[in-house]
Image 1 (cartoon, one colour):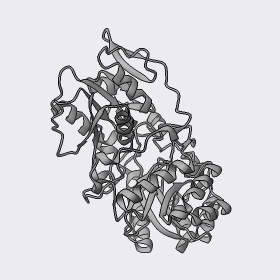
Image 2 (image 1 turned 120 degrees about the horizontal axis):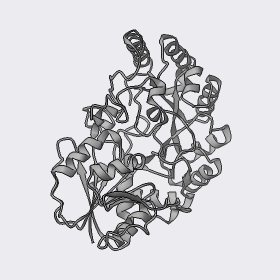
Image 3 (image 1 turned 180 degrees about the vertical axis):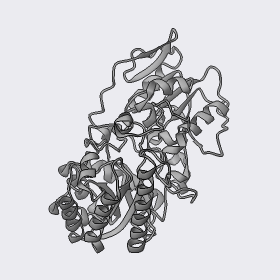
Image 4 (image 1 turned 90 degrees about the vertical axis):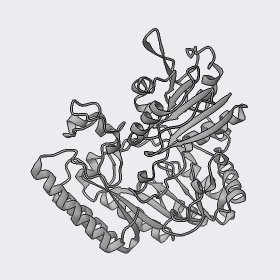
Length: 436
């Protein structure tokens, strides 16, 4: 069967209007890999704001990967504008679909929607492409007799090591190997995923899976060796939602890759690291950990459900630099309840951390679809979500970069928020420079 997997390539998901590439579409790369392994012919097609007309007439099945809510609009445009055979199987899946599967199924006039982990699901869907009888396929929704039907949920895979490596060969090398994305260096690098899911309940985060799954050290090594052989990489960035959760799993990966001589970075919470683990990571080539610090205000951290404190943040950053690893901080400004005083708390924390922080990235708060704060928007005084009467149909406003939209608060609160944001922005720019 000839299968087209369509995903959104939008540069400004990384940096607005700078043509700075984001990491590759791992969702479709894994789906393509399992489909190819099963004997299907797979092509990956990109959609961009200025490229929503695709000729997909030569495919028996077309899958739309709804990788983010911010790109939902352009994916809808691609569905409307592209040529697809009337008898082709149309599938939808991805992060947005996992949060809102019913509307995704309807909006895309799809035959079937995958809800959740989809590598096994897509193979079973393709097996039923001719009959369109999906009742026996776990984890899907379909329309039957003008009603939406839902099968039983699909259980998560017990061992994601069983998956083939992502089908990077279906994308050009320039989409995979970058020289401006590893800890501020110019090293040739690629992105990898060594785990899935995040068990922590941060209210602003759109993590679609709460159970974490790790690959083994042997599996991680196999992928890195393949990347070195195929692309001559010098390093890699782990893009997992929260790589450092299970210390034993992280150590297994570190021990397995230590002799490869690669440099790497990862994301973490401040309350999941300790000195022995950081030492192990440094020995294996880790040069930067990006921490979700978010705020220096403990009341705001509590409201965000971060379950951390200023002291925990300072301890983690100090232990990181002591281990010889650079620490980067992500800051979110403008969460509901942000004031001039909470902004001062953030500035004072950053000032205390000082030179222990190699880099700082500042983001404005955006209520991302699928998050707790989005689901309970009214509770937080937030307007403008697609679940509310004032919805304007503009999905692109959920970009997390350069977002100047007013999401909550009255005029006075907004003026205070704007003023405090620019003071924080100026403070960070003067101390750490402009960074992404």
